Amino acid sequence: MSKPLPSLYSGGHVLAEVRGALGLLTLNRTNALNALSLEMIRDLTAVLLHWADDAAVQAVLVRGAPREGKPPAFCAGGDIRFFHRAALAGDPRVEDFFTEEYRLNHLIHHYPKPYIALMDGVVMGGGMGISQGASLRVVTELSKLAMPETNIGLFPDVGGGFFLSRCPGYVGEYLALTGHVLGAADAVALKLADGVVPSSSLPGLVEALADQPHESVPQWLAAVRARFVDAGAPQLAEHRDAIDRHFAAPSVAAMAESLASDASPWAAQTLAALRQRSPLMLGVTLEQLRRARHMTLAEDLRMERDLVRHCFALRLGAASETVEGIRALAIDKDHSPRWNPARIEDVTADQVAAFFASPWPAFAHPLRDLA
Image (tube, rainbow, N blue to C red; front, side, top):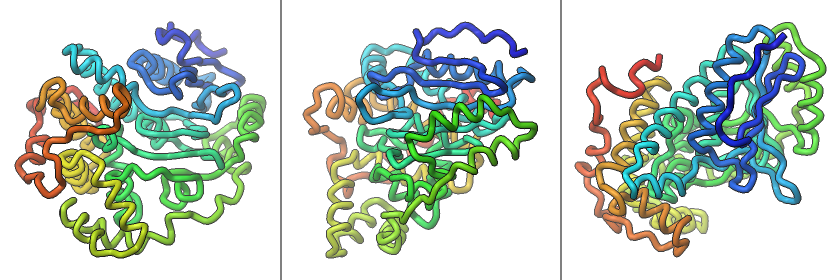
């Protein structure tokens, strides 16, 4: 018999139940595309730790709750409106949010039991963080995967440096800097998903796993893989040579110059997208990816925790690129952020380097114990 679940504090935004030998987690904040709050992160962590020690739970599955009459969403990321309010008010919970979220990401990557993520619909930012470490990452024809943080003057965190830098060639740099949205076929081709199951078949998959417990990890995973269908042709394949040519450049300014010399419509659209992002955070993101390529996950998460502290503290309040980006995208919705510096070409190496100086000595780092 499974042990009683711990108390949950997210007001029903995380639903946890044990069905047969399957621990089932459902993100249930549907009016916000299941974006993660601090309370949801705490509930997910508490339940996963509890099930890790519960012999009756053999595997865990995480999904997004259905959105009646609307397209599905697994998880659209973190609660950026909370980030904005907390940063302007000096609310220390914004620090807790990122520390605890990154711990959750690390836990999922190292979870001792099969952890299966049904990445149906929108899967962005923090949604990638709670799915990329899964034993199996299942996408559907409705999946939309992205790390769009540069849109709001942030960087691709939640381990984004780790998993994007391990994409083939220089696609990781492209995805990190532009926030390009991937469909199922591209996600599988780039090793950001393991297989495709039709969206309409997901309830049947959950029922089958709950009704038919398996005796070993390979059997659990094989039961899911048996339902995979053909992923189709990846759309990004036709641009792979161009991506590797332009995004191998040593700096964002050099990438912009390279793209400007390319007469293709794709290059023009890509350059236009980069010109809309925070020039400073593009520089930080590129340096993050290049460093993370040679790091473990734990090292990357510690670096990202340093970076996010600087995003909210190096420039306080409204002077923060991140606070300004959220204002323009989600608060005032004028889509006219006032970036500083305003141009990619004006970002200096010293400005970027400042983000990589850890605010903590190693012995006091909030993620110092991650293995």
